[in-house]
Length: 403
Image (cartoon, rainbow, N blue to C red; front, side, top):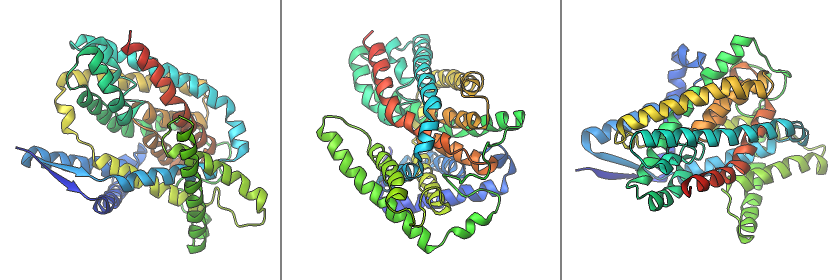
């Protein structure tokens, strides 16, 4: 008989840091992981999740992590994305943003068609295909859990929540693994390079040493943390206002918005002040927040939920992965311009389509640290995932479930 061991928040964060560092150490020794741009927290997080799975299989021990610290790191990360967003980039990203919106909608529809066909083939109600599709993949764990009760009510499917969680879990694992190899194939296969190689990195310090590292000191770090906190405080206030208006958005979305506002107002109100946006210190803090978030997310995966679905989840998720990879390489990449930025977005979209926005950003970070910066990519993809996906996904899912 199994038993649950609750891991408190402080210990969860500590383990997350250790897992992150373990992944960095493994990547430093395993050239193949670096060659295919596998993010360091992905390496450590997946290895840790296998340890958690082993404890469950051998001793029935189910580790339950308090992820409060992880969730704050996500807010911190998106506030940093906002601080880095220049109005000129937002304007320049207008066309790519619209194109990515259309491509995302097509992906949502295709995922649910594949999910419905797979569900019917394995004896599930066709409507439950949304749990093999966009509800669990592009939507992630939260969307899958939110829609599972309605799917169960309409179809009579038992264990709908467990199904959605299992698909989202496997999707997150696959998302963390496909983005880097896609980017390597496109960038090295076509000899692509950044249009502006000297541009500042928005997330992370480049793998190759440079003078940028010397610009990081206690004052620059403190200045960045001050403005991140200001963006988060303003984000909390905006979140309350949005909630009072009858809308509900994840907290990181208002913090992203207020980061954009503060980041663009600051040089106008204090033009002589030391910079914060696009600084190595902000890039370093953003990488830390994202990496620790992803390490904690992956180490807390309950991989044993996947085994209960057996052959059906293997076949359907194989089909979803093949579709995502083919769509990114042969549709998204050429539509987005077939250039370096398109390759970075391809790496991100591969993670986003199968997993979650943080996984997508981690994929893009690993790619840009190796090959060079692409600031607009880091603006366009989060805007799509933050503002558009939940609405479009809900419309498509509702249509299919009530069909």
